[in-house]
Every structure is written in structure tokens, then in C-alpha cells.
Image 1: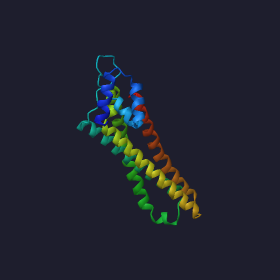
Image 2: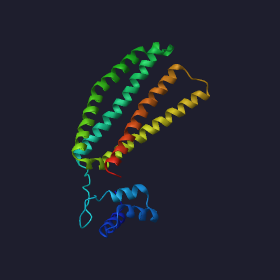
Image 3: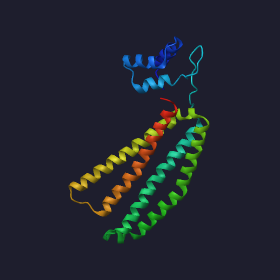
Image 4: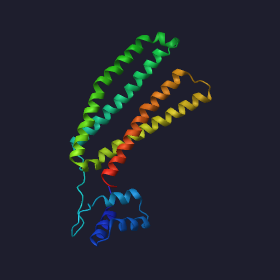
Length: 213
């Protein structure tokens, strides 16, 4: 949410017939960050009128919270079980002595991951499509606080997983313990986490462009 002093200044400046570019330059000289300035300017539309016309702001409703929590929750479940399923398939392709003793557990893990994906992934896709329709109908939903928070949280989790994946790779590389099986698992984690990070990073950029920030 923009600083009240900032939005008050922007409103007064626009009322005094200052252009948005002049307002932006003045705020930059005063030390406001680019994000703060963009958020302050985004409160007002470009409609020509005697006084600054405020833009409609997205309101966080219980319904929106439900759909976003459902979408991101099923995303996490799907990503985890996709990784787990691929791990177990790698274990079967490159077995070791311990895997022979764990064979019943491996099959049970594969069944669990498959079942989770069959249920969670379609729910994720359907929920994502519903949210996309809502956003297409009402573009101000792109500015929803819960949308921004959960998207950034997902990117943070994905970035943390990527960092941990890289540390694990370097640790084993320094110990001379790299195997085909290990490298494939590292790649699985990197692809799954990287895909989530890239997709939602692009989503945030698309939101900013759509809101002309």
C-alpha cells in the first residue's frame, strides 16, 4: 500500500496540472524509490478531468483468499509429489543395494505421489484458469494484495530450494561423490523449482505491465 503522504502529494500535483512525468521526476529527486513512485501514481488514472480521477483498487475478499490459497496449496503439493515421483523413478533406473531392501516402500511412495498428482494437479489447473478468467474480467484484481504476497512467497520458496540444490551439488562435487543418480536428482529439483520461479516472476512482470507501473 502506498504511503498516504505520497498519494496526497501525487493527487495535489496532478490537481495543479503537473504531468505524471514531472511528478515522477520530483519524487525521484526527493529520494522516493521507483516502486513507491509507481505505486503512488497507479492510484490515479489518465482520464482527462478537472480533478485527478482515482483508479479502482482491488479489495481482498474471503472468496479471493480461498481461490488463491487453493491454487498455491495444490501447486506446492503437485510440485513436491512430482519431484518425489521422479526421484523414485530415478532410484528404480539406478538402483543400489539398499533399494532392494526398500522395494515395498518405493512402490508405496510411487503410488502416493501418483495419487497426489492425479488429484492435486487438475485442481491447480482448474483453479488457475478460474483466477485467470476473473483477472481478465476485472484487471484490478492483478493488484490484489493476496495475489502479490502468495506469488512472492512462492518465488521465495523456489529461490530457497534452488540455492539449497546448488549448495548440495557443490558439496558433493567437492567430496568427489557425484553419481548419475545424484546429478539427475539435482536436475529434477532445479527444473521444478526453476519453472515455478520463472513462471511467477514472469507473472509479476505481466501484472506490472498491465497496470502500467
